[in-house]
Length: 536
Image (cartoon, rainbow, N blue to C red; front, side):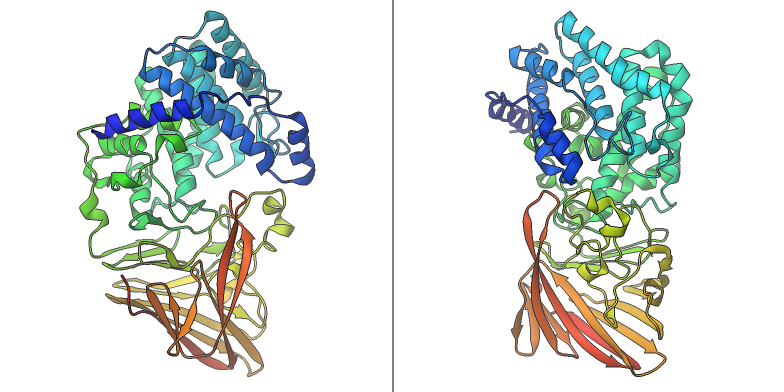
């Protein structure tokens, strides 16, 4: 069976999964409850299940007779009749248009373009999109227009596509405003092309940039995909797959394993050539995992049977990459991979995590960076965010100085001393408000089968205590003087205290993190760790 046939089979299976789905109505009580208590998932799970059903039914119609059946017509009507498309967690800052109101509008317009629906239903889409998107955009300036993150291409790009589908004669009057948002998004990247929000947000933001860019050029002739910086942003994904399907999960990355959209990746390959590497197809999105029509549709619409994956690149014995603006370092060896970061503690989707690192053998993160926790109101409230374990440096593999964690703010930063030739050395004392700390140099030396971590501390006197902390999602075991973590052994020059902590994952699931604390005391000393021995 060809890959395209396999995806078509997934579309059919997904359609059958939602064939009896009739739980269309979103509750205003759930919406208001989310607004009151800041807990998003109860309402959002229903919201996105409904979008998944819409996608399943529409994609099946597209691949069969391109005509809407009764189930698709009913759910389109239901989406049009929703009291709001804006998520409750977004409405305080963006009451006019948010990410998902823009997405919903574009999805309805695109479905109406590619699939035959009754004229009165198309008119209903046209009218509600005019009220909720066109009129709101033309009569208001939204907060997201001043952001420097994924909101810009998602909102502006989808709005631009709404105009091109339903209001093409009015597109010229908003074109420059939309392009300003798209330019602002590209300017938010450093010249290294890294997305400090993580690969999940890269895909969300840059994917939507590509959706709009492709349509803009095809319909109107303007090309916004030129330039070396765009090419470097496009290459970011391939560096994030550090070992098999294990990905870099710094900041609010949503998973340790991030699948890729094969349509987006094939489109980038067709645009930018062999510099773009296609991950093995076994790591692609399954159609059943896509709630967003635009993403699922382009998995097929942009799929190219003549493009093969670059499996040899991803299974190669050694790849070293340093992102000089983001200050992220990646070193992939035959049996394991290391990712480590410097930067500052006021980045997009920031965690206080200077010096954090990941070691994976390709099956699990042995030394873990948990990534995003459950999104709640508190998670995005500045005076509460860094009390959340996974956002605080307490939840990362970094030192604790005299009981103090790293501080939030752009002034709390690290300096990269050396990056390359299997070395990543940083000075990170600037991450802490710690009296008497005059130096904290963290050194990673990467060998063929191990990583040597050496931290060198300097204080003004002997009254200070340091706890070296390591975080894992694998239960550690003490064995013959070492700490055993799955396929890896840790050898340290100090005693270890083991504990564990349950935290809420991004989708509300409870996850156990295992904590290894190593106590040190003195004026000037170093802590050495050897990670290796027994890698698969």
